[in-house]
Length: 60
Image 1: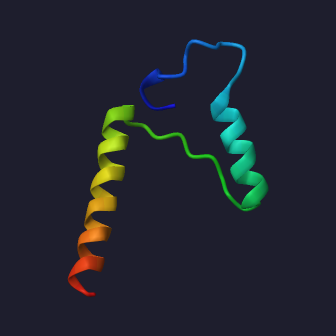
Image 2: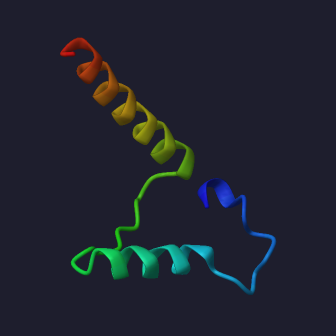
């Protein structure tokens, strides 16, 4: 979904399918549309993951 990788099939909205699945599993979840470019969002996600892993490894 990031960066328009799955744009070839215009008839099927995988983003909508993912949102529906998440909302079924977590009824209180709300859709958030980020106001940044997908690459920036992916970089922030990777950074958050790296920081979390670093903290866990330092404390174990």
